[in-house]
Image (cartoon, rainbow, N blue to C red; front, side):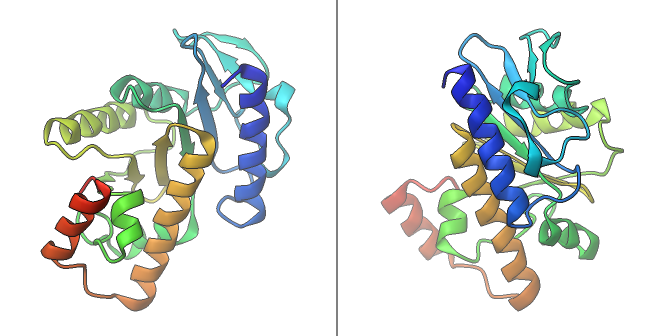
Length: 217
């Protein structure tokens, strides 16, 4: 995606998430990896509903800021995600209400914050491990997330999201639109789990999703 188009898409996705309540105030951030290896990322303390294309931070592959407003303090985490998953082109972080509430109440498992309760969660999201609490922007979180991604790949079940305890999810995909869709499915699954506590899909049902749709579970 060309830089100008990526700037516009970051603003469009940020506004959509804000208007539908997936982010609030100045919480959350979006980044995109450009073809030359540099990054675009939303500025620190920016409201996702009122982003301006020209003010999006442009950061070199080495982390040096090239233009725009000061980059989000989560830049190090985003860069480590891109480094651990070569297919990642966009990372979105939010403080989505039901997902944060889930960590306050207690997740299903540390390896899977919610059980596989719907086929689309299994197909579109997959396993989502919990990352222990650290203060916002703590560099140790970047190491933990990168190690978790690499371990999941080694186990043959690549992930596309993690949940930061008490802070919110990080999801990554090939485009901002795809990352937003993954985030939406994850947040809605957390809402369903908190509301209904349904039984998980059976092993046979999950295996059918693997065979038919290539689900990564």
